[in-house]
Length: 177
Image 1 (cartoon, rainbow, N blue to C red):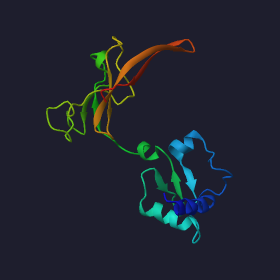
Image 2: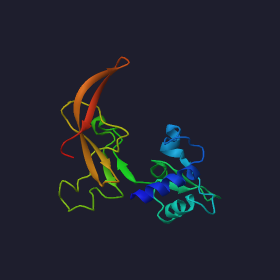
Image 3: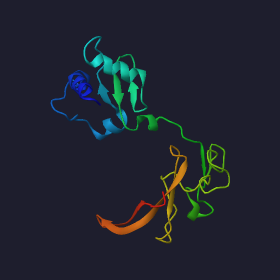
Image 4: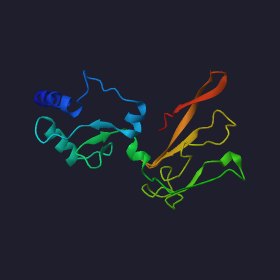
């Protein structure tokens, strides 16, 4: 933003968030992540109006209109929480527990159609990250399919740690991603 734009936003912020007393908004994690933090756009005139019109005209997925109101709510994940990203067809693990959670189809395809066929990128590999098969070898990569990226990402073993007497294995993003 250019300096004049910052000055303009500074004037609008007390109207958009009327109860703030400093540069921080106090809200619960649930509000920030799912329920939403209120953006007050009930004004017919004033410095908040152009900002609200801009939000209304370019409505990002993280901002939703409040029903029967001119206001909006911002949240990081509400739009994901109310979306259908599948359907997925996964292995239940009944026949082979070491394949539990593995995605074998996404939107009725057993490969990713946005990529060149028969390439590493087109392979549907991993789980949706809600469940993983039992770990038999710490050096094996874990794969997670991410619909937003239309690809599978891998995680590699970093170290063993103990939290409240529970042994855990820490995995991190692979350098291959």
